[in-house]
Length: 432
Image 1 (cartoon, rainbow, N blue to C red):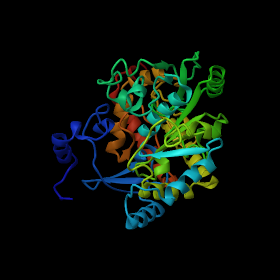
Image 2: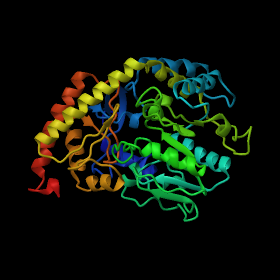
Image 3: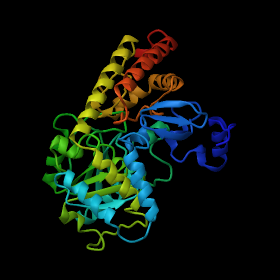
């Protein structure tokens, strides 16, 4: 990297050849302002930008890097796999081993199909559900993001909301004609035209919104009544909130699961799976077609297996403890600064809502985002070398690499950032 390369100069170059200068919209900092930092390397809890500045990182590739950046076991697994070849267009042992590992950890998961992204996983699960049931209608929830396929983009949170968009141009009325969007944390009435109810069991694309007591159980019962399938989108929660994901944590078994992030160890990999009777509807066994040249890529499966090998009960206990400690610290310093805040936590997942009351659905999450406090807090933290997601609809992802000293440093810097934000607000603005 040239000594004269800066974040601003790279962003200027990127905008000439890449729409908006980024390959995923949230990276453009549209909702928080400013120029994105360009990462040159990462290690453990930290990343460094091209100007040499270090950031204590709570983005962690939006949850993919649960061990922290450049974990030695993952680096070695990828190095060894790359030395044998990067892709073959033929089955490998790694695919089989990863599928076996996923099914062993998740009760009720009997078969999986590997793909290359979370979006592929959810769009494939949707097609499978329609093919298996012979029905067309799907139900999803406002603020739940299931990737950028047309039928599932309606009512999406996360990056769509960060851009200030009402869904997306280019998605035709016909593409979403069979999509029903319901409020999160309320069990909708279903009819016998519904093929599948797709839900984030823990909503992590509108900040962090845990399921209300009885919500997931109610969805299971409602699907059973009308013969619809229930699909848990665990791209974020899978193998992060516990060894068996959210379904094991809450004791509610869906018919289909979608996974991503953690299972790829930082490389592009996703999966969808479910009961054998449903999964056998996929080609070459059944009539539902799905395919991918790079599906089950040997580098990605090697990385995923290396990560899962590190995630035992002790690792999850450590993650839970660190997230609990961080949530308490952040809540305390925000209150001390007289900012209205909620810091919800579920396992190692954290949210940050600038609101007087707990957030339970997308409307409330959007109201918290519209105060504008998150934008100011993000900038104040980034100036101090702490990177959180550049948008109020994302979660925070402490990793196993974040030690106690990192958490204390985060709290100290957050206290100073919160005080700065409060000074910038007009009297009463924080609670408007």
